[in-house]
Length: 402
Image 1 (cartoon, rainbow, N blue to C red):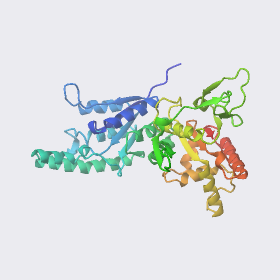
Image 2: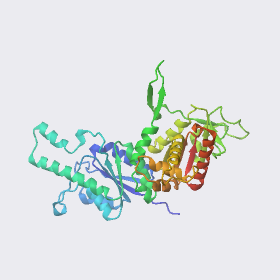
Image 3: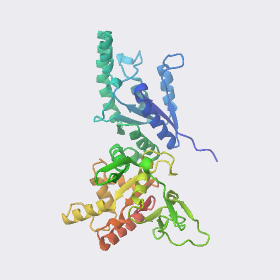
Image 4: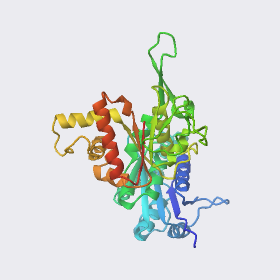
């Protein structure tokens, strides 16, 4: 049997201003089981590699990742018709002409960016040194104009993500390299920006006597690994609930004593039960964080796509839509279509069709938090039936319910 070909992924960007972002892209490519090709434009002798050498390297790759911020970069000389395209633009153009996939990531317009790493800073620096020339001013003005044109051109290729920090690149790149074509073409940057912020903190009240102030701590700093008691994680099925130590069933002969709760995630269906404050929600949030920015703390499959839902928010959405007779809403409260309806309603620019395709993929993990927070038994049972129907509609993906 022949070994599976490892895809080669070319990472193209300016260098000094995007060093951390290039490293994040490299890590994402590796997590997707691909080989990153990181072309540096200077040799040990301090000379740039010739243009054709760069473009030949692009020809050997299966995809190109372009990361673009506020620097235009090297403009090779001798281009046809006196054009002044940057090396990154030329590399992307070469890939597009060969119908090689180009994944473009452009810095968010709202992102606060260091002035010293913007194209215009070159003029300011020259002024401070008393070395500004008409030629430099004209070059910088040209580069700023062409940088805008390049970003527009890149957006026209069909895939464009945005970033504000290095972690913004990791999950979208990993997903784009592992997902189906239609899912890969979607811009998930807003979703993952929300998910990282929403699940990235632990809020604690009253650290000082008489204080109701909320203190926020990064979840990675305070998270304590949980264990499951009584061997309940051996078969993580809906009727076998993984529990905190002391809350589980009595141990049976031959069953494992206690195991890390994350080991239960290998199953397709998992229900986690436990007392309030036992760590169920924190566990789900930590899993979502690991999917966004893999640290190796959990053994999750590469490119796992997390769909994080608070059940109380989903139930409120359903009740409101039914009360207002929202046009296009599912006919019954137990219809799994409500998952898509709710997800589409969030401000992530991802439609129901995207989530429907995503939920049909094995890489997807649906994290449903707080079934016990439903207001009464009737609602709780109705939501449980909705999720049961969802597992039948989407047998490919994994469901975890607390």
